[in-house]
Length: 200
Image: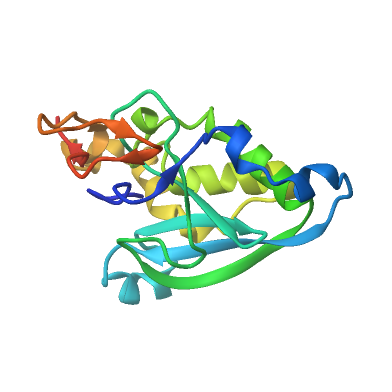
C-alpha cells in the first residue's frame, strides 16, 4: 500500500536495457542461487498493536541479489514497479524481512524477470484493496517459488475485498489523479508534483 509522494524519488521500470546490463553479467550464462526476501514496512504506528492480531497496514517489497523492488501508484499507463535500496523504502518504517525461498537466477536474469513483470503492473492500475504492493510481491513470490507471501501481510486488503460495502467510499475507488503543476516523467523518475490521491 503506497501513500502520497512515495514514488517521487524512486527508480521506475523499465529502464533502457542497453545501459543497465554490464558485460560481465551478460557474458556469464551460469545461474547463481540467491535468497528471496519479503521486506515488510509499516504504514502507520497503529501496526504496533494490530500486528499481534494478525493484521496491519503494510507495504512490502521483494529483494534478491541486493536489490529491492516494489509497486506503487502514479497516474501514467506505464510501469509502477520501482527499485530501492533493500530495507530502506522511503516513506515507510521497516518492520522485518522474511526469507521466502531461493531462486536460481543470476542478478541480470532476476533484473530481466522484474523488467518483464513490470509491464503487467502499471502505476495507474494500483488499487489499495484489489491491486496493491502486497499483491505484486505475492505474484513475484508465486512465480519464483510456487508459494505465497504470509497471509497477514495483505489480510486487511482481503478483508476489505469481502466487506467492501463497510469501507469508506474513498477506499473503495482508489485511483490516481494528475496534479496540474509540472507533473511529468523524466529520466525514469517521477516529479515532485505526482501524488497518490483518493476520490469517490
